[in-house]
Image (cartoon, rainbow, N blue to C red; front, side, top):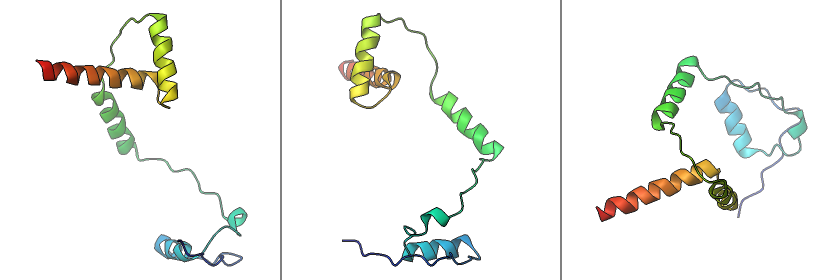
Length: 106
């Protein structure tokens, strides 16, 4: 059972470091002062990190073209939606499963 944290002080104390703030919020609840918390500025990843992520993403998969009957696509979409995944992801999982199954037979 979690112990209840004491409420944060109003107004919030000034912190000299992120570590000091983290320690404070580990031991105090912000529920009562939530509306007073400053909105964080969106962070931007460094250009080299963005480039590395993009390269890894494109290197991981190669685009192909495959023609399917509209009924097959509709069925894949319905099944994928029931599993809360995208239908293309579901199709990739089925292909990977079929490849593994056939590799075992060979």
